[in-house]
Length: 178
Image (tube, rainbow, N blue to C red):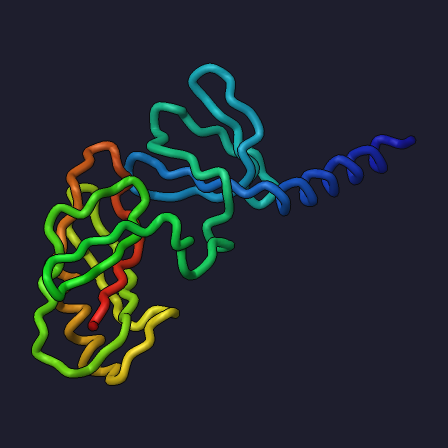
């Protein structure tokens, strides 16, 4: 076989393998690099990004995700949910590697019922930096009012402080209106 044929076979095998294996590297500065991690040698790792090799210093890396985050399901598995109930207030949440330390105060000033799913992003100190009510799975008798009430409650929520956590972590809070 000629060198050109071998080279084209090698390049096509790289493009097929990178489509199958996706990694996300979170850098210490908060930036992300996506591609296929190919090797780790001493203080550097080699990653293929858009078919091009990129050398990255291991000391600059915070964490590596060995999956394509874009392919995660929109609603986490129910087995990962943690539940909190205090009187009539009931919430469940999914926040990987984190524990809720200040629970949302819901209150009962409504006759409307249902479950509002709130997409939440927290920082490494456990503070909620964004909360979006009405994620898939929400079912209520009055969407607008319960969405506003659930979003306001979730913005006051606090999770444990973790200095080694990524700059932001995404999860969900399920606010239940009985």
